[in-house]
Length: 617
Image 1 (cartoon, rainbow, N blue to C red):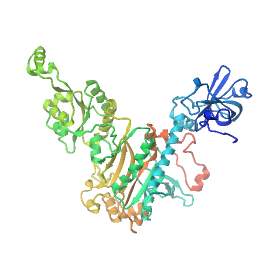
Image 2 (cartoon, helix red, strand yellow; image 1 turned 90 degrees about the horizontal axis):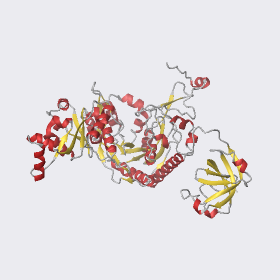
Image 3 (cartoon, one colour; image 1 turned 90 degrees about the vertical axis):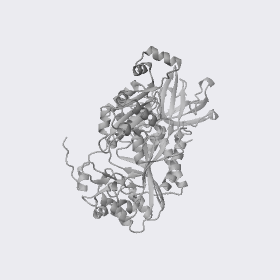
Image 4 (tube, one colour; image 1 turned 45 degrees about the horizontal axis):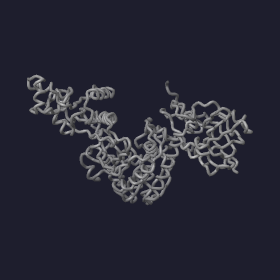
């Protein structure tokens, strides 16, 4: 028999009754039932109930055992009484009578309990992560992560991709985030960088003729943390292909990710159709370039209904160039209480409020006022069939713009009695994000968002350039290495109209994938950077390795990267990425368990030729 275990704590069944077995694991829970001691013994695989009575030779030793002690037991497998069978676990038909025990590792008083569902502060959980990871939910999440990565690899190999590794120590290359710099001992005063992504290396592989590459790649970015983003490092399914167009990339990655979500989605619906939505339309309809399509609400421009209207705020606003009024339909939101809650939401977002109209059944009072007759007379006319109660618009906006305009808005938005609409105005970039968040809140509060579904959408046609509102200076708005649609000809026209072959994949309100068809032509690349104010010398200095390679017969190529951490977060139905990362940092990019970042020693600094300048507190 093996020194530590003959079986795991999930392996024993009724077929093992009568056998002598050896198990090792952690004491999950201890129960004293009037002279009978029961222990739930746990390992990575499951739980087995072990027990002893005063006749057991190790009963006195067993009484000393506490939660999370690591122990080894040896004993006989017994069948449980039928009334005591636990159908919730694989080992629920048996228990093991302990005849020998060895304590492999005692535990001090626990800073957090492994058994149960108690909530602990994040700082405690991260400081004692090795204990936090013993909990069932965390074990499940980490196994899920491992299985997802394995599935991704298998699916990529099945598509004739090969996995290649790229350097972890490389040159600094600004790609939209801050680098982590690594000082060089052999070259004092110079620094390497940890790669923000394998972007340049995978493109160089295409130049080298490898055709199809993928990697489960670590990426390092010195970023501000968010619930869905690590502040230091993350992993992505990174891929690149030669001789492809945009649709080829979509056709390659969709079955991989769709298969992963179907395999690990827990029975939730996975959309088969992944629409392609332009960046411009995504901003208009959803207020976000990572829309949640489980929410059916689509925003619309309703500016024409407010031009010259009695609502002076919007009417005067629309006299300014580049302004719009947009409506957020709210099917089922036609009540003053809900409208007031949404108005309060807008105030919480820093706005003075949010205009609204809601539609209700026409009241006898309003008809009486309109016709100059009594309510009693109106009721009589309704009863005789001479008058039919229609619908009427309510709310401050409705009173200001009148029934004809409110009816036109209702018809444009496809709304009816019991529905509402909310309105925001100004320059779209100033209010789109708030409108998008309002759309999310409306969808959630009115039960419109289908929570049991994974809904995907490709966001395409990203603008390459933007102009500074104050200076008018042109700069890159999105990935500068994307091939412009129309090639060189497009760059000779209005730069603000140039779109790139760049794309993101959104799922349930998160960006899962980002990629592009690359700009592999040096002359087009130099022109693209020239428009943004970067000379040829600067481009060659920053991206010399790639630019030089492109002068030696570079093939057209493109690819994308899918965020592994974020995908697992969605599959695990978690709201915070730290729940699916084995050893994450906290919100301040600190590792409380390993005490990182830490102060270097004087010898280390001297060897590297560095000096730390104290920061003012």
